[in-house]
Image 1 (tube, rainbow, N blue to C red):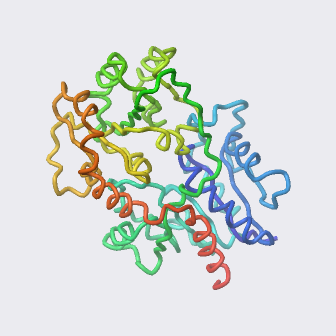
Image 2: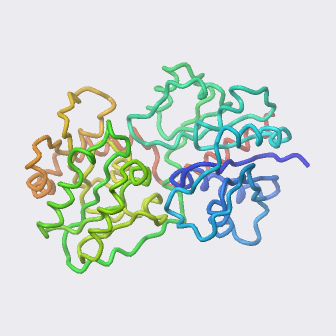
Image 3: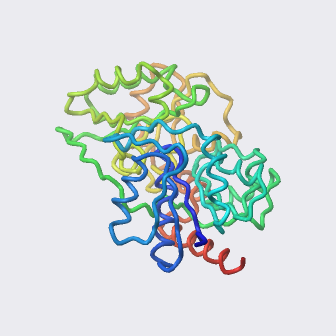
Length: 370
């Protein structure tokens, strides 16, 4: 029996909220369609089983190299099977599939290198201004789904056919399975989320991160959410020990392993944002609030579109100026609100939660026109 749509849950945990809402919307809009969800690990399988429920018609299928991880924390990146061998073995199993949907680029090696009847839909999952668009795999997608017009224009400038790019809004805004993790702070203080980028050349963590965190914690004026990008945990070997040292304080919430790290719970809960170039700031700015950005290397950023988020708050280069900037951020916030709204709109498009239904409609249109 021909599978009409296959969703590929083969990557990191953070991809799931960008892909699952579309699967959920498609299954609800067209329950008669034959839909498969290919999963790389038991963690992916267990999350999908829980969210889809026992009565779903979606088939959850084990990808080649599937790993059974037992009771794996849902927020921690699972050990994935080697991706290229997985894709090489998966491709023949997709021969009878009409449409394949993914939220990462690696799966696009299949239509890039192999003659496939299946048409691939790629969902761009990043929301920042530093996205890599210059990759030949992007041209292999029959349809690329983006949040905002800015991304459509950027991809078109890199050779992707504009006719194959659909602007639908921010899919993750429609993710309904958010953890809403309890923070349990003892005092009624403003809450800061510190969200450094995971790549060293874009991040404040290696130059300034531990110092910034200790200053905030020792000052005692703020509650702190320390729930860094899951890939930072992998890239900075000492981070887990540092986070463990913070545990137990009633004004610090530490999280390195729960699904709340990737589902938007913390960007929704914080009053102030402290970061550098992480795309988490875009989700934070779905509701404008004060931001402070750390620039330990003195980047010449004005006019550079990769640093467009730095128009949304004060940029601090002085290593002794972090607390002072945080202390004045609320008072200065009215001067940044217009820039924050403009940046969020340009990055996310419509963040009302309607994007998953639009993505599902685009996939159904592809099925009807095949």
